[in-house]
Amino acid sequence: MVYRTPGATILSADEFLLHPAANERTELVRGHIRMMTPASAGHGLVSATVLRLLSTYVWQHRLGVCFADSTGYTLPNLPNTVRAPDASFVRANRLPPDGVTGGFLQLAPDLVVEVLSPSESDADLTEKLADYRVAGTPLVWVIDPARRTVAVIFGDESTTLGADDTLTGGDVVPGFVCGVAELFAGLAPMIVG
Image 1: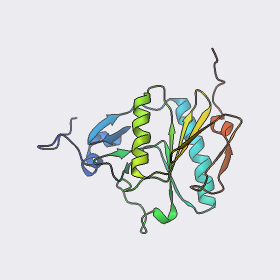
Image 2: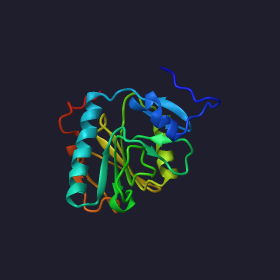
Image 3: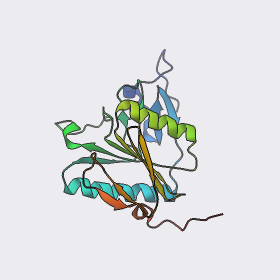
Image 4: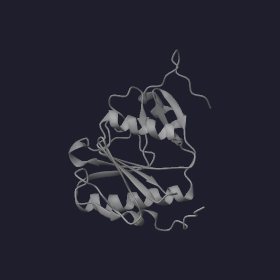
């Protein structure tokens, strides 16, 4: 089924919410729908692991709410753009006082987690990271299952952590700590060569 907005070539976030493609793995970027391939088993495992670790900590300390993949955010400062990170966190004081609704969240997450996929190009990742920065997301973790690394991006600073390092939530998720290797538990050993 093809959805068309009469007289328009660009969808708004509200139109996208009603679009059949919004039920699939898609994002809205500058009014255009971007299809995403389904996650691989390794991608899904790493996404679920980071969400479990982060969500458990956030819930226990009443810091806010973590959201699973495919949760849409209408990003501020970016017209007609809805991004869906692999996992995300929003501080309690930034959540709607009456609770979340059935629509997209109208804010930038405080923490975005992106798990790299083989199908994701460097250009796509660069664009996503730029969008989160413009929208005001202070902390991004880019997890690379193939290399067993996490790039931690905080403002203008970026640090890459390896499997023997420790990942923290910094000022965004105070007190959160886990070993980087924990994120890759259950993945087959890396093939070097």
